[in-house]
Image (cartoon, rainbow, N blue to C red):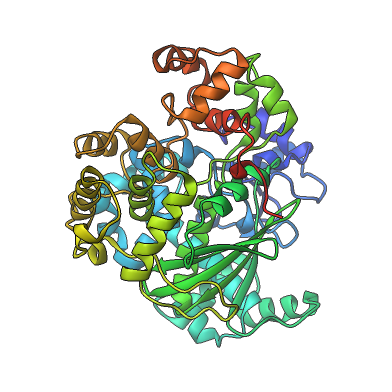
Length: 490
């Protein structure tokens, strides 16, 4: 979009928050870059130039605006709607892979050479993987500076910087303030002291967002010990590269409040990325709803409660295991089966607030389970153990960087995997916005009540007009049934 100057200028002049994250406005006279919705008076058109990423702005010598804080914009929805190498690279960079494994590790995961990845990212985003990771480190550093009392040296290494000097130079360059000045400014605006060890932040999103199905689904399917709904917040444990964490997510009209308790602050970038992915916060609900509303059968559902998101997962392997446990059983039964696995094979954790007791077991931990002790039909035991084995030995990888069609092909050949299981994993674990469940009982009931074709083949043909947003159509169709997944818990 950043190449369409006229459209960008209109967005800036109207201060349209829907375009935050799509592009950034750099002002040639002040050398500042802003989000489109920046509240200041828009600059003259001849003084504006547009970039596709904050990293490209920083690389061109612009610093972040202190009013609109463009580094806290929602991410571009483009990376969630695509499965090409650039989109997969952006999701991996968002997960902190470059900080942990370097550019060679990023390239290996994607199956390309480091030079190819560099060239593709430069062509599309105006910045290479190192510059993109640097911009993310700066954002992480700002969060730690403003929300914790960690010494600056600890902040530097937790944010992924290789030295304190690099950390100081980057913060000054990006924010035009020294780290100590950032903390002083934040302290003046804080009304109450922060809880020691807890990082509190706001997760932005593009309006509208309907929390009912999003948090209702997560709460209704929560695995005891790993997830819970408490005091208006969804809480769960997180398995992270350097340790574990506990997160509490609370919906608000203009943001999601996020409270993180981490055993290692180096996991902050990954934890934030996982939470945003879980809640589908980088989606563009206006674009999705506008296309689905064109179908007269779907329009009333969308007009009644627009802005539905796809509830995802923080770990693809975890969700695949839970999807198998949920085959042909009720939601309550699936939770019971999962809770038994957690108790037997999960790692215990301490929750200061009580309620959460374990991390969900990893595939490696589940690889040694005795299938005879599972209260499942024999065929489903085989399905589960085969899946766990493939995940544990690395022959099957389910993550934000997965190629959607390749993952589908690898899943469908596993014993006991039919179209429903494959598509629900594609929708919630892989994040494919076009995943579709025509054989789902709730979808078929909704189709029949709305006057849509109720057979899978006919419904799939009708749903071609909903592409590439069929996963969002599923969320609206599920609302036809009065199921707990559609309501926030009391």
